[in-house]
Length: 69
Image 1 (cartoon, rainbow, N blue to C red):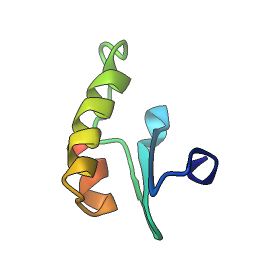
Image 2: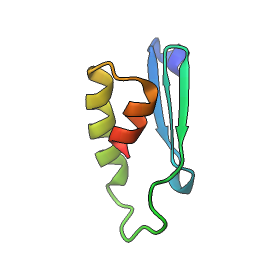
Image 3: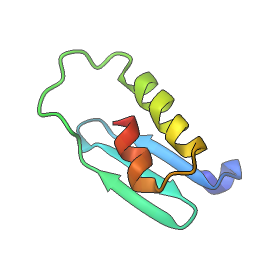
Image 4: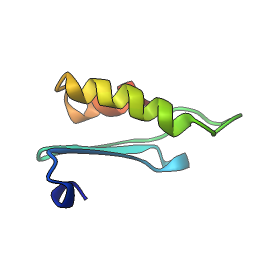
């Protein structure tokens, strides 16, 4: 997907499986940090906002995933 978009980075959430981030050649998968979810509506928006900020700061993939999560 990153290649199709012409992007150096890509961050994807995968529900109960956590999140996956790619920054250039670095890849990182972070498992979900919670054992239960009360309200999943809007979680993607929060992840996007925080991981985007981390990406703009050019943090490593592992930090982008952690900041978003």
